[in-house]
Image (cartoon, rainbow, N blue to C red):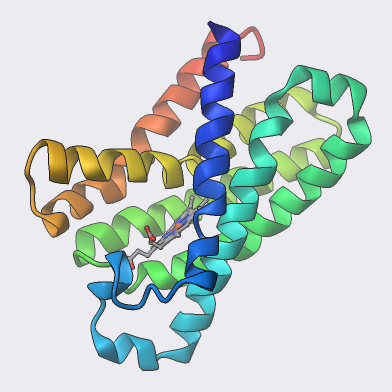
Length: 203
Ligand code: HEM
């Protein structure tokens, strides 16, 4: 059961991790989220640059993060764990700063803006704490902050699970659903992470 859950976790993280590639190979300007953006926004070059920075490095954070939770990898390939960890931290740092800026233009207005901006700040904060903990050789704190950090990274996956459930399943309008999901994509993840930390003996 544990193995199956880990497989599902790895599969979802990998699928959504490679999803931003679509934006670089297909013209997405009239589709999905971009299709709903006001045309003036496309004249904002900083937004454009930071949007692509955010999605590319967010994808890398998702792809590099999941395997770090494998005990086998940590025990047998410590160097790989360290290198993937460095890529993860740099990706979160840049994607998080970019995410904070693009959050100011989020679809749905102030409630979505606050939802995504809070997520970005907490993403940076938890990852920074995870990094500084390991610099100080505080392994347990490092593990706990990384669980919180990746639970927030996983918001990219949960957002894309909640969205069709609300729009297709409950028949809610896109904006109505999006405003709720700007919070729902990460608050339960963080609560689950806290529960997991306390349940494991590492608390
Ligand atoms: C955890 C912190 C994250 C924050 C704060 C965040 C924030 C945002 C914001 C504000 C938007 C634009 C929403 C709008 O304009 O309405 C966005 C879009 C997007 N983000 Fe993130 N994001 C995060 C994580 C990730 C990760 C890990 C990925 C990796 C796949 C990712 C990939 C994307 C993509 C592809 C979009 C474009 C919308 C779509 O196609 O669904 N984000 N994000």
